[in-house]
Length: 132
Image 1 (cartoon, rainbow, N blue to C red):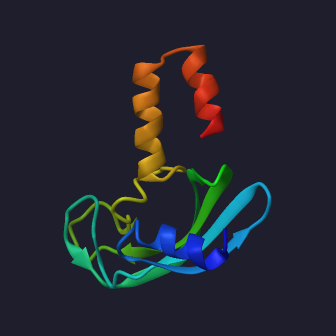
Image 2 (tube, one colour):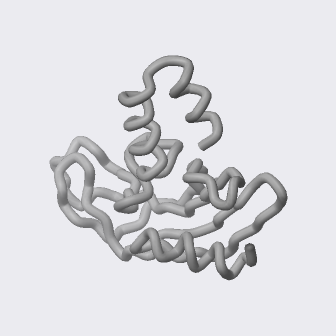
């Protein structure tokens, strides 16, 4: 599979994300991307902020592509909350359909693994989860 094909395939899954590069080898697909939203809502009080505090890379495991493990390096922003009375001074933007607080897996992979755990509890589920 060509890198352009993989970029298009992955990019259409998530709104608000710009794919910068896709690097592939025999065992891994590495997607480097960044969030494109101009603002985010505070996770504590809900007030929308566009004031960026800093940036950092989140490394997420995603569903396999073509039998290869997929890792997403997503550049996200930490925003300053605009509400003076909010207990949370800064917060990190979340990308719908891709990230959730403290998650190291994509939302899609997280849902698949949860369903797998319910349906195939025990060793059978654990063996199958390793292949994903």
